[in-house]
Every structure is written in structure tokens, then in C-alpha cells.
Length: 572
Image: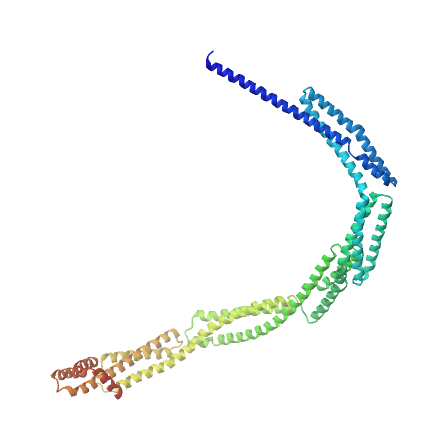
């Protein structure tokens, strides 16, 4: 046998030993746990045997004073006897069986029996606990119920004091509350009677009844004054006010069918009476909620009345404004339509201008028809003031839009007449400017009048002729007329500027030559320069003549320009 084989065998034996030892330890631990569980069950069985049922029953024995209590006492005693004589011995036998299974190492049956024993102990414990609970309830009842009744009596006296302090607020419900206080008093007496004979089962029901009655009485004491105030005063008064206002508004022919006042008043009174009947028997459930809702509804009717009154006021005011503006606008449009033939004859109107006026007229007629229909509906009381008042706001907005469109169209027509009148006035101004240009040319005897003056004079005359021709046309094209006027004004102004500049330059040139003559003998160059300047002047080249004179005279007078300008200003 080689070394490797020996090592394998050694490891195998060691593993077998380890497994054996482990299994043995697990088995011992399990047996120990089984034994420990058995000890616990045995201890629980002993606790069941020592339950203080008998001692608790002994406490009850002195207070058994009626047949019902005696019957319950015997029942508890018999039930515990049965547990002691049947349930506990059965558990004891099951524990012995468990011990036997454990000694014989019959673990399979042990586990099954263990579960059954645990269930049996649990069931028996529950029986004993329930029994003890019932018995202790009786033993503690006297003190417990006494404490509860003391608390309830204190609450009762507090409620009675509140009631007495403001008894008049409860009005005709006070008598009903008095009777309810008497009923509670009787129940307190019933409590004493049944406590005397230790009938705690009946005492329990009496205490519960008293508690419910006082709880209800607290609600009654707190809510009834408000309920009485609402049902007997506030709501009837509101209904009366609503009826009065309704009748007044009917006389003023307000459309109020949508509010169904008669029906709502009748239903409200009917509902109030039903609630009052419930209050009289102290059935207050939902009474406060219903009355408050009813009050809110009645308040909403006042708001509806105000809405209609404000609607009428707004409608009357807006109607007056609307009627006045519609009448004025109708007159304006009709007048403009009547003048249309004359306008078409005098001015070159576009089809869109004429069409636009007819369109706004159609819009106005449609608006008048809608407004008329609303007025009829109001007269038949099919439309309320609040609705027609809102409609009027929209009609006024629409009317304003039509007015603006009309104003824009008529402004266009009016502008044509204004433009014609303005063109005639401007023609006079242009003709006067032309006359001034001619007078200016005649105011100074020029040796030569340049060609550009005659060209511009011709252009200005032609432009004036075109203006006159356009004004004599029927119909007048305002656009063309304005163009002709602008052209005529520009050309005439250009002519005037040309004439003015020519005369001024010629005068300056002549003055400078006359002024320079004093220097001719002093300098041959000055003499030559002035001769050249004179030649240019006589040819009509006034600007060049002036420039040559200035250049020539600056040799002897550096300030010649200023002197000549000053001389010109004095002689102008």
C-alpha cells in the first residue's frame, strides 16, 4: 500500500468520525430541546390548574342577590369544574404520552403529539381566561359603574345649569327638554335600584342608555337655541322679505320667472315646518346643516334680486346711450349715402370706398335688429334684465367698432373735399410765387437773362396749367391732383430761387466792378481784371464776373468780400 492510499484512507476515516460526532451532537441537542419543550408544557399545565377562578368566585358569592346572578354564578362554577375534571386531566395524559415517546426515542410520534398538546393547552387557557374575565367584570362592576355614573351626573348637572340659565332661548322646545331631563333622572334611579340587587347585566344597559341620553342632551342644549332662532325667526323673516321684494319687483314688471320664487318659498316653508317637527321631538340629525343651507339659498335670492335691479339700472343707462348713438350714426350714414352721387360726380371714388360705406350700414342694421329682438324678448319677460344688460355691453362695443369704421370711411370722403379746397388755395399761392418771380426779374435791368430761367419759367407755367386742368376735371382724381400741386409748387419755388439768385449775383457783380474802378490807375493787373469781369457781366455770366472781380481786388483790399456784401445789403 503506497503513501497516497494511506493518506486517503486516513482522511476518509477522519471525515466519518466528524460526521458521526456532528450527528450525535445534533441528536443530543434535539433531545434536549424536546425535553425542554416538555418541561414548558408541564409548567403551563400547572398554571392552568392554579388559575384563581375559585378565589374570584368566592368574591362574587356575597353579592349574589337575584336569580339571574345566581344562575350565572352556578354556570361559572360548573364550567370551571368541567375544566378541572376533564380538560386538565386530558392534558396531563397527553404530557405522559410525550414523555413516553421521548424515552423510547419515538421522535416522529412525539412531534405529532406535541402539536396536539400545545393546541389543547391553548384552548383550555382561553376558556379559563374568558371565565376569569367575566367573573372579574362582575367583581369590578360596582366600583366601575359608580365612577361612570358620578361622571355622567356631573355632566347632567352642568347641562341642566346651562339650560336653566337661558331657558327662554329654547322657546316652545323647553317643555320637551324638561321631559328629557326627567327621563334621565328616572334612569339614574333605575341604576340605583339595579345596583342594590347587584344586577350588573341590567346596570350595564342602564349606564349605556344614560351615557347616550346625556350625549344627545349635550347636542340638544348646544344646538336647539340656534335651531329655534333659525327656524322660528331668521328664515321666516327672510321668506317674508323675499316675498315682499318679489311682489314689488313684479309690479315694476321685472322678469323673475327663472327664480321660481313662489315654488321656492312654498318648499322652504314646508321644509322649515318639517324640521321644526323634528326639533320638537329632539331629533336634531342634519337639522342645522339643512337650515344653514336653506338660509344660504334664501340669501342667494336677495343677491339675484340685486343682480336684476343692477341689470335694469345698467340697461336703462346703456339703452339711452345706445339709442342716441345709433340715431346719430344712422343720420350720418344716410346723409353720406345721399351725397354719394354728388361725391361720385365730383371725385374719382373707388368701388371699395362705396362698398365699405354700404357694409358698415348693413352692420348697423343687423345690430339694430338684434337689439330690437332683445327688447321684444324683454317685453315678453322671456329675457332678464341681467342678461340684456350684459348683451347691451356687447352691443355698445360692436357699435363703437361700426362708428370707427364709419369715421374712417367718411374721413376719406371728407379728405377729398379738403384736398380739393387745399389745392385751389395752393394754386393761388403758386401763381403768386410765379408773379413774384417775374417782378423780381423786372426789378433790375439785367444785360442778359440766362436760358435756364426761361426753361424753368416754362416748366412752372406748364405745371400750373396741369393743376388748373385737373381741378376742372369731373370727377377729380385727388391722388393726381395732389401730385400736380406738389409738382407745381416745387417748380415755381425753383424758378423763384433761380430769379432771386440771378438778380442778387448780378447786383453784387455790378457793385464790385463799380467799387473796383477806383483802383484801375494804380495797377494794370487790376484794370485788366476789371475789364475781364465787365466782359463776363455783359455776357450774363454774373457769377464768374463776381468771382474775377473779387480775386482781382483782393490784391489791394483783403476784406473786399465783406465790403461788397455790406454795400449790397445797404442798397437792397
